[in-house]
Image 1 (tube, rainbow, N blue to C red):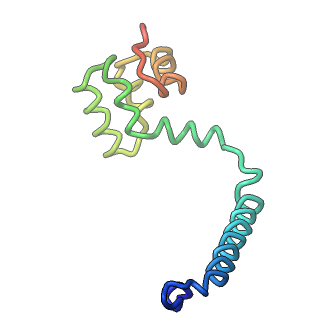
Image 2: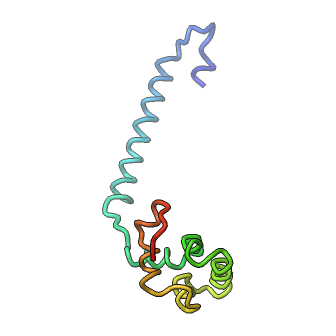
Image 3: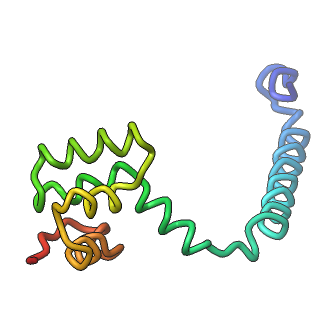
Amino acid sequence: MAADNGQLELNVMEPVIAYSLFESVHLLANGLDALRTLCIDGIVANVERCKQLVEGSIGIVTMLNPYIGYKQSTKIAKEATETGRGVYELVLEHGYLTKEQIDKIMRPENMLKPVKIEL
């Protein structure tokens, strides 16, 4: 509004614009500081819960494609969706891989980059 009220492009309202800008930056900095101290500091990951979420995710079935094939991976994904059971559990139940093989394939380090694991 201050810029609209400056007439003849003399910008006599520049001090008001600068004051408002600095006030906004100050408010934003205070808000971010409050967010950090009240919401972010002290947060730690629940490792067990994170592991459960990863193992229960249907998306991890794509990691198994090179080892059990697309057809079996699709079957596992559909069954996991329909029953609500985890991919890890279903692969073991169907006997596609052993527990040791699944543990080797599904290590978190292997999820970060594409690597073919020799079984």
